[in-house]
Image 1: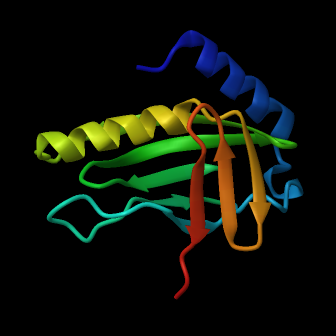
Image 2: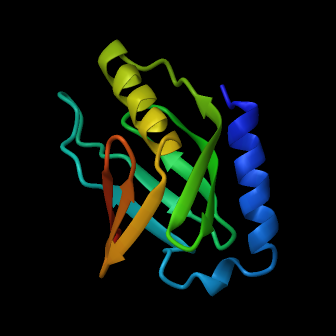
Length: 132
């Protein structure tokens, strides 16, 4: 569930960035990225995020999927999850998906080195640009 504090921070960050999402060229807007993680047992799937030009996010997790929104100001980042589809997931994958969404929701800063994006919070998450 999204807290009022998260919404307030996201709105404030979006207001500051209105019309200038592209000004932060280091953040990978308009990019698809894959989490640096191993697949879950019995699956080859690895979570990925597609970040739109304005921070909108499409999530494909180990089993679940959904949407969210990144707000970026300098090296500060806020992720607010949207509706997440259950998709009748096995318990272990559902739990891993829930933990990943919680980790994304708790990120505070980011850094980028080449094709690697690190989202820094209590549990750092590393994503690599998906090459075609």
